[in-house]
Amino acid sequence: GVFGIYGHPEAANLAYLGLYALQHRGQESAGIAAADGVRIRVSKGMGHVNDVFDGSALTHVTGSIAVGHVRYSTAGESRLANAQPIVIDSAHGQLALCHNGNLVNAGEVNDALVREGVIFQTSTDSEVVVHLFARSREKGAEAAIVDALAQVRGAFSLVMMTADKLIGVRDPYGFRPLALGRLNDSWVICSETCALDLIGATYVRDVE
Image (cartoon, rainbow, N blue to C red):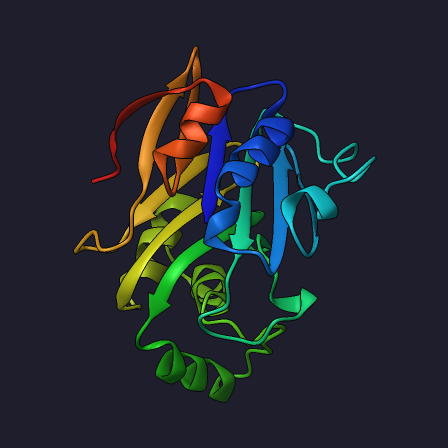
């Protein structure tokens, strides 16, 4: 399950509520990252949303943009290293990535990257996207994301965040769901509209 919100002072707390509504989509791990226009901070752990984010777990995850993920493993084992969001620093700046779905060519892309010296930290197919993003020669984060996703195939939706942007993506066939909503002046992207309902947001349309 993936969730993202842009332009809200309580972004991380709303991401928590959104993930709580999406808990049925994954019970292995949960994670939230937030951005304040300068840097991305992340908190994640194994278990259910209300267990991972009890007490002060979100106090340092500040900013008006946030993304969140609940995981049910389809590729990669159940361990903390595979929990999302995956957050990286690169020549294009920081990126936080939350992924739903499967990349059918992840194995061959992974092998090619390893032969070029890339070191993988997880066993998920999601990580190939961040390496392709980091290695892209395109100018700017958005162009690098487009370049990276042009090299993968599968049924997927992604919610990503830079230090100042929220980005939602579906595969060219639109197999995996991704809804777009509004909460006053804020934008919301999520796997299912139940997450919009819980935070009082209005459904606009599916991401095309």
